[in-house]
Amino acid sequence: MHRTDTRRAGPREWAGLAVLGLPTVLLGLDMTVLHLALPSLSAELDPSPAQQLWIVDAYGFLIAGFLITMGTLGDRVGRRRLLMIGGVAFVGASVLAAYSTSAEMLILARAALGIAGATLMPSTLALISTTFHDPRQRALAIGWWATFFAGGMAAGPLVGGVLLELFWWGAAFLLAVPLIAVMLVAAPLLLPESRDPDAGRLDLVSVALSLAAVLPVVHGVKEAAKEGPGLTVAASLTAGVVFAVVFARRQRRLSSPLLDLDLFRNREFSVALAVMLAVLVGVGGTMFLVTQYLQLVEGLSPTVSGLWYGPPALMMMASAVAGPVLARRVRPGYVVAGVLALSAVGYALLALVEGPGDLPLVIGGFSLVYLGLGAIAALGTDLVVGSAPPARAGSASAMSETVQELGVAFGIALLGSLSAAVYQRTIAGAAGPGLEPEVADAVEGSLTGAASVSGQIPGQLWAQAQEAFVAGLNTVGVVGAVAVPVLAAVTAFALRHVPAGGEGPGDADAPSVDTGSPSGQGEPGVQVCGPSERR
Image 1 (tube, rainbow, N blue to C red):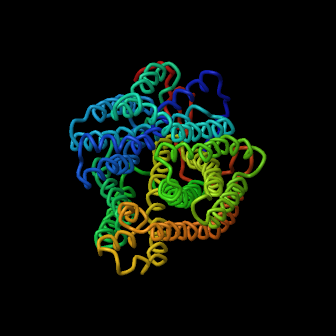
Image 2 (cartoon, helix red, strand yellow):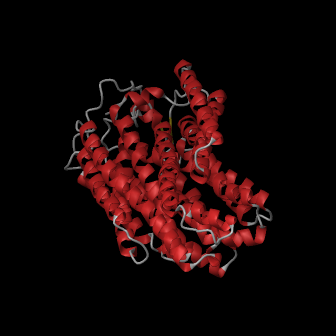
Image 3 (tube, one colour):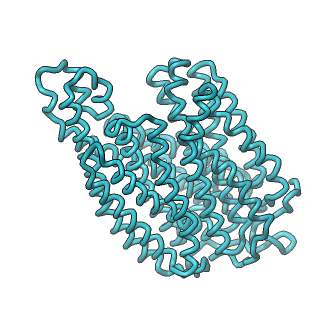
C-alpha cells in the first residue's frame, strides 16, 4: 500500500467528516427529489417530450463527463478549495433551477448543477483519503460517506413530498442552500487543505478528449435504454471508444496527465473498480424495474413508492458501516464475496415474484441487493482511494465515481432491454384484432405504454401486460442469481492477497510515489495545510 502514515484521527477530523457528509447527503437527495417534482414543473413549464428528457438527463450527462476533470483539478488547486467553489456553484445553479420560468432555463440550470456536482463527490472522497491516515479509520470514514449518500437517497421522497405539499416545485431545488451554507462556514475550520504540489498544468486538450469519450458513451447507453439498439446507439458508443483510445494515448505522452493510467497497474485498484461496475450494473437495472413494479404493478403513488425505498436504503446504510468493521477481522475480498452471496439471494427472490400482491417479496429481495451495494460501495471505494498514491487521491476518487455513474446507466440499458425483450415476447399477440393499431402497439411495446392506454383496453389485457412485465423482472432476477455468485468467487480470488485490518501489501507493479513531503509532514507527495490556512 502507499500509505505508511498511521496517525489516528481525533474529534476535529470526525467533525470534518460530518461536514463532508453535507454535500454527500445533498447529492443523494438530488437523485430522488426531481422525480417527485417532475409532474408539477411539467404542468407549469409545459416542456416538450424532448425537453422533459433533457431536464432529467442533463445533470447525469455532465456530472459523468466532468468527474475525471474535476477530480484531477482538485489535485492541482486544492481539494477543499474546489469543494467550496463547487458548493457555491451548486447553490447558484439550484436557485436558477428553482426559479426557472421556462424549460430551456431549467435545462441550463440542470446542466450547471451537473458540472458543479462533479466537483463535490471526488473532493469529499479525496479529503477523506488525505484526512484519515489510519487505514481502519479511513475505511470506516468511507463507510459513513456511503451511508450519508444512501441516507440522502432514502430521505429524498419524504423531504421532497413535504416540500411539494407546502410550497411550489422549485422548493425541492432549494435544499442545497442551507446544507452548502453550513459547509462553507465549517469547511475552513475543520478540513485541511491538500493538493499535489507537483501536479503540473491542467491539459485542456485532455479535458476535451475525456468529455468526448464519456459523453457519447453515456448518451448511447441512455438511448439504448429508451429506444433499444440502433444506429444512433452504435454511433455514439463507437465515437466514445475512439475518443477514449485517443485520450489514453495522450495521457501516456504527458508528464502531468489528466488521468494517471499507471493507477490501473495496481491490482486492488483495478479489481475494485471492476467489481463496483458489475455490481452497479445489477443495482441500476434492478432499481429501474422495481420502481416500475411499485407504480405500475402494485399501483402505488410516486411518493409511496419512494417511501418503500426506505428499507432497502437502511440495509445499504447498515452494510456500508458494518462492512469496513468486519473487514478488520476478515479479508476484504471475502467480505465482498459474502455480501455478494446475500445479493444473489435477493436476486433469487425477485425471480420468484408472481405479480401484484408480492410487494414484501420484491422489497425483501431488493433490500438484499442494496445490502450488497452498501458494503461494496464502502470497501470498494476504500480499496480504490487507498491503493492510489496520495497525490492522486482526487483522480482516483473521480474514477470511482465515474465507474458508478456508468454502472447505473449500463444497468438500466442492459437489464432494461433484457426485461423489455421478455415482455414483448410474452405479450406478443395478446392485444387481439379488436384494438386500434396504435393502442395495440403501445400495449405490446412496454408496460408504461400499456399504462398510457389502460383506459382503452380490457382489464384482462392490462393484467396480462403486468404479468409480462413480471416475467421480465423474473428473468433479470435469474440472471443476477446466476451471475453474482460467479462475481463473488472471482472477487474472493482476485483480492485474496489483501489482508484484514486495512493494511494491504500493495502490488509490486504499483505506480511509484513521490515520497517528498513539505516540511516533513503530511501525506507522502501531498501538500497539507492547516484547517484554516488559506492558499
